[in-house]
Length: 359
Image (cartoon, rainbow, N blue to C red; front, side):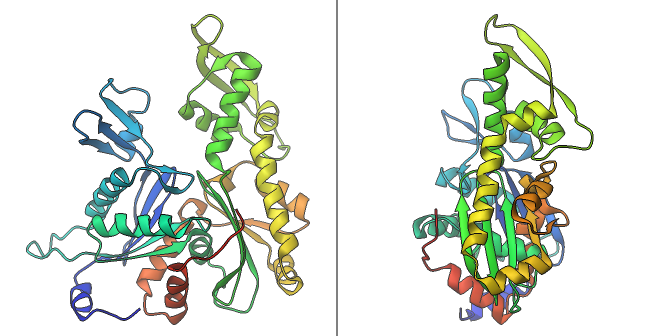
């Protein structure tokens, strides 16, 4: 990864960025400033003119409430780019928002960007993420696998000869990796995560109560009362939507016990994948993981009792990372802040090439 002299000169004026381009949320880490943006990965577009009306939090507030000609879309599906043009515009918006040049109004240096992508993506999908960042005015763009970035952001000793296990549960994908000596030894990526848990709640309400609820209501219920393990004190939450029999508004109260049964499918799949990854892990690394524990990251790790459920199923200690929502962004940000670190350069170089993974 040789340094371009032009980029080296203008690098002094840029604020390099680490970006967690997530299915549900996009976070941007600015070199020297930390995370400055954390907004939903949603874009509101006029279908007639293709003009972007809003991005992020403002666009998410429009979901389900827009006139016919404006649609609020999530341009990433299962952690990968579903609509390249919209992602490009969204990235350009976030880069511009994060990168201000008040002190140098005549200079427009382009930032160096490291973007987190799921470990299960193809080379074409990696290239799409790089191209979107470059077209959004990045001067250099690299991709890093999300479990590696999450492990760095969570403070795991990825450079040392110690086995570390990270489980990153995002909106579209769950990434499970065992890392040692700056490389991923075991890697599982499944497209079951927070979105599938939301969908399970929608199906539960429809099946059990003939109640049609939206994605935002399902997400609120998941955050408030969703659980993967019996709680010390069970919680109740109100679901509001439309009665499928009468067509009229309806509200029902459900308990965390009912919701736990409703989301058992995707939760069981995630736990089973963690066990499958452990079964493939070399015994020396398993011994390290037994000593240091499994680290959970991503928004899905905040599901009530998930750490206890995984601990019960794997017989391993399980820890939730500090501020799990920002682990990938902090990890990518750390890589741009210490870009000359040989270990980080090796990680970035390896990630730019195709590698087979279990899907």
